[in-house]
Length: 143
Length: 125
Image (cartoon, rainbow over all chains, first blue to last red; front, side, top):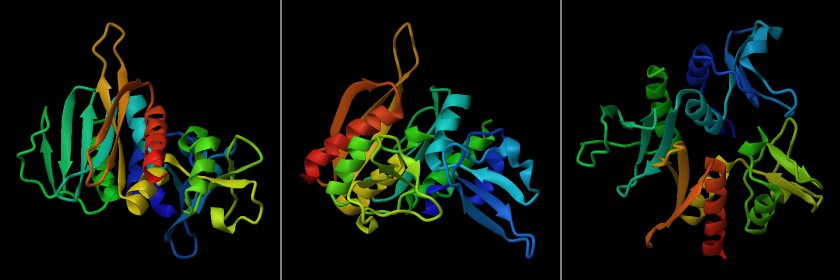
């Protein structure tokens, strides 16, 4: 279930970049050992937002769902992020910046291009969410 | 926030088709999803038949791929018109068979995903 939410490092970067939509999860730091833990929210009316995290100094950031993160990139920055499974069985992530330029994240190798070049030597990701994580990391560099 | 969850009619059909993944929200005699509380809910574990789990769109896409080998994809495209903007299309790929690509314009990704899910229901009967 936690896999539906972006991981901690990405959530923290999204906060730094101004993500402030209501979320159903958040990351908190345990006072006793400093470990980061994930917490669910309990209702739609009182979702977690980064701007009101002053309620507790232990709250680090809200945790968006992947869909929320990609929606935010699209609505606020005109960056579209999507993933697709290739015929060879691995996942690639696509980043479309300002609806014009296409930046493509391929496995550990990131290729920037204005068009999809299927001849690139890329590896792809085994897991869809690993592909999305990479795409979001790359998209964060664009804003 | 609610837009991230599939609407009631889709959730109902998903339950009928055997969707039983842990969900954050549910429908309880209402067309509006409510958060389930501290623990995720499962369709199989709800004693009240009227309760229907409300999955996220992203969960449904994953479920079709993992349980039925059906890939639901969405693609956005810049509209070539005076108004501009983007539109969303969807494709439903029953892996190993010809991909069905839908060329109807959808204003949002959620509209496109709803179309894709309805199309995928026809495949799994």
